[in-house]
Image (cartoon, rainbow, N blue to C red):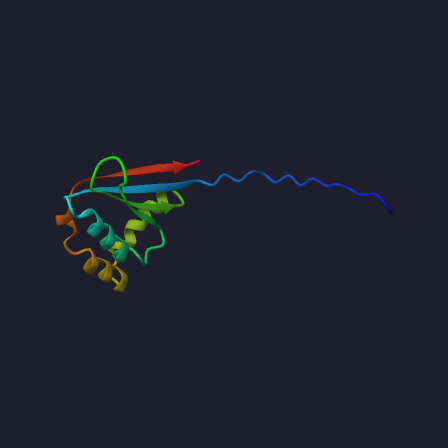
Length: 115
């Protein structure tokens, strides 16, 4: 009818989005954190799951954290398969990562679920 306004409310179900964030943490030898961060950034540039490469500003010294994001744990597990493949991308990554084991003392991995 003319002059009447009808307000319709559309209620959509809330979608639950699950996401996994992985922190690969490296404690570097003194003077090597920025070198290792640069090496990671160059080597991992073609991999879509990589979110950030970070170095410490507080906390433990000489720390490099590589942050990756995955849809779920299954996607994280499957991501390891592509690193095992022998192709141009993994060859380039291996070459860029040469010697990285000599740049750090220890490391750890933390896996978080985003709510």
